[in-house]
Image: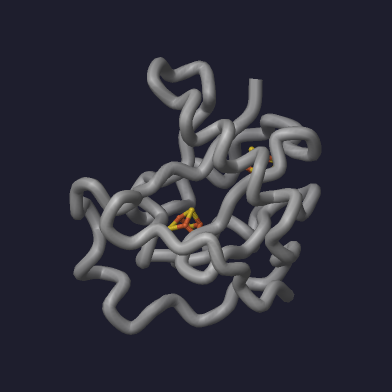
Length: 112
Ligand code: SF4
Ligand code: F3S
């Protein structure tokens, strides 16, 4: 098992999750983060820290798409270990449906 970041993170990107991860396995895209499933130790401490509840255990049904996305982009986006500044309009994007189709960016973030 592992934990994955889902599309609820897109354009919210609060980064509270990176502060608590004991193995620094978050990777930064332009407007969302992903978890490297090969490094994640499944401790679960990041899950309750995410305001829009974007982090899920991959034991929940229907998350195959997000597991693939996390595995793929954690190989090309930079590692992030420190919380940066969330987007000014992050709150407005909490709970917005279909964020992947509307807003996903495959561009890397800056990492830290
Ligand atoms: Fe890091 Fe634990 Fe979250 Fe995995 S479950 S990403 S190891 S905090
Ligand atoms: Fe995204 Fe939640 Fe982390 S919004 S950056 S998964 S705290």
